[in-house]
Length: 118
Ligand SMILES: [Zn+2]
Image 1: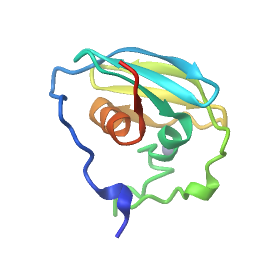
Image 2: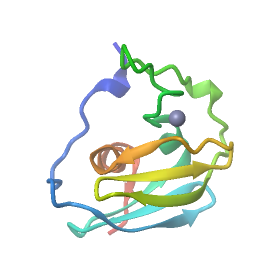
Image 3: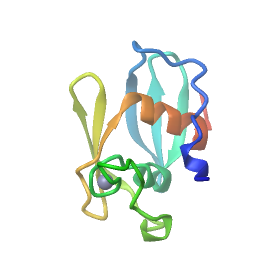
Image 4: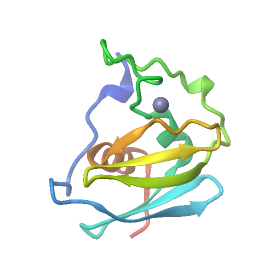
């Protein structure tokens, strides 16, 4: 069984929760401040790995085709853009920028892989 398929704890997240601040936190982490008051530092590596785009996940089976060993250990975000009111498009230092990350995916990744700092 793929451990990354386990649902992340969604303790304090609902439809109205949005990221209020997203910015570089350290050379290896992105900061996410959420409208529910929680703030997390999340490894870029984990965010890059969970990219939900068609290059990284098989559209038909939903299976992740991107392998952890194929993610650069020092990958970092070089740009973040809002997509409507539901997702962020993140551009990466490995030139990959097709991933649109829905807020619930980002929050789940914060809860699972992030360090809560606020
Ligand atoms: Zn992708």
